[in-house]
Length: 247
Image (cartoon, rainbow, N blue to C red; front, side, top):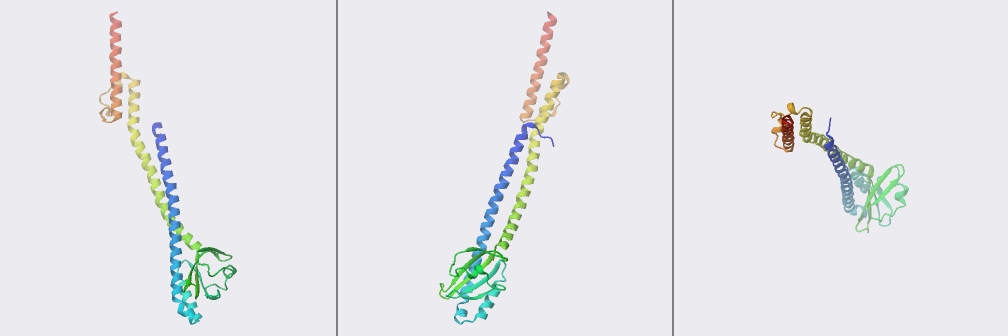
């Protein structure tokens, strides 16, 4: 596809603008989706931990550990939740979903620490853990671990959909830019051909029937200006020839 040199820099600038918009939008999209989904999963897990804490008060007071285990087994089936464990007021583990046993990193951690923490369990994976106290910590604590791999997969899918949309807009925009630039360059090309025609053969080139002369835009104005100077040049040449003949 031939692009007039006059518009090549303009087209390059359009490509750069589209690229800048695409990159900046993608970065913003990835950051927004990552932050939003991560925060959403964290808040949901905190809500589940609080629900378990509220539901397990009577169970813990009655020391019915089988019911407590059954309770957390139901919640661990929720997507994104990898493990749940409950400790009493002294830090002793009352129930958990670890198989075959509790990892050393969990055993050595402070069960009364309620802030969100990131954990790496060798051979298991990476997790984000949230906690909730039972009766303000008097009856113990509940901790829930979320699989960061699952969260990352959700983020990747969401970002991928945005990337497809942005890529489609970018490709369509590039072809549209080329088409519009060519559309703008076509009158210039016609004007250039007309000027060459006048330069090659002034007598045959001066034609009132050229379509470009009928245009109402800048290209038509320039074409009529070229024609005016060509005709003026013809008149001057004729006058000079007549004057020389008389001499």
